[in-house]
View 1 (cartoon, rainbow, N blue to C red):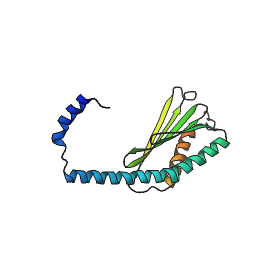
View 2: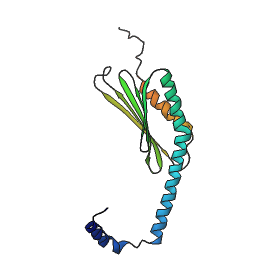
View 3: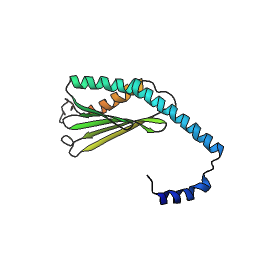
Length: 161
């Protein structure tokens, strides 16, 4: 229950401004309808493309005994992969009301390069229209390729002159 003196003070300040023009209310209703479209496009993309792709990647990693974790928090889905001296995390979220963002974080722990280093990428797609399912697979493959890009050192030997 709210404090009565606060409610009285607040109502005294708000009452003179409670009349809202119909145009302003109409704009708010339009914004809410657009937001529902964005949310629906995100949910459809998440359920129809992202989750099946993540599931396929998780099954592959489980079979190959790759240490990984999938977690969700709020509107975010995260895929974290741990390797001997680096780890990476892909965070997929509806970052703004009208877009889906893929944040790619790859951390090298320093055994190979000296100090810890971070390689971050962010890709954002507009949710005003439905997204094709191929975007999810493309982003996850991008993340996985960035994660392993320099794990294997070249077998080429240097030629001394």
